Image 1: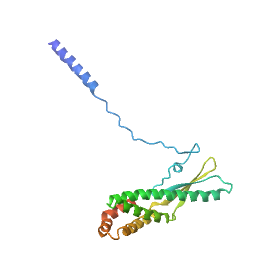
Image 2: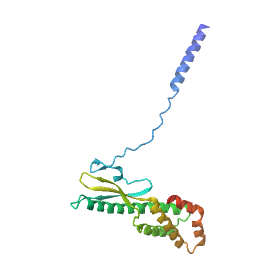
Image 3: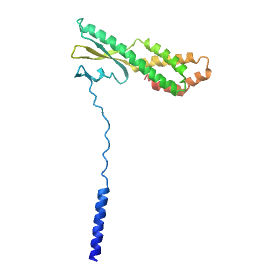
Image 4: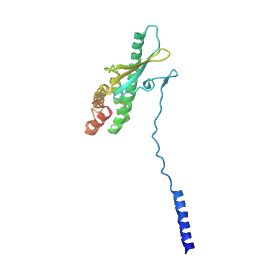
Length: 199
């Protein structure tokens, strides 16, 4: 009897040991990737916007003016002018991307229409003259070059873009009542507001 009890205890211990070893420890949850982006300009740490101009709620561009004997006032003018040029390029790229997405989602995505509307809207965006754009930050690099962050509210640009889209689509669809009705549908207009918010 003692032998039987001893065997049962030994078997129980062996099973407990085996099951204890086979239980996996809970796996550590993977941590979210957090980029450690450090912007370097002229081999020194610089404000992040000098590498990636981003400001929530605004279109943003960076202008650079080399050190000049004409002084800081001249450099500021050059940096702002270059910043507005960069800003204009940023806006046009983003508007084209949003336009392609918008016309595809609303079912108006034929190449001919997308091309016509995009050209018309881009032309209007170029005429905005960046009303409301202004320099919001400045940094001087070790070489003396001036970096200027220039922004314009998205809502300012988006209201012009939305009006331009409506006009361009209207002229593209003027002989096609069904497609114009499709564009005028609530879903199409909701998508337009989503891509180009003005609130």
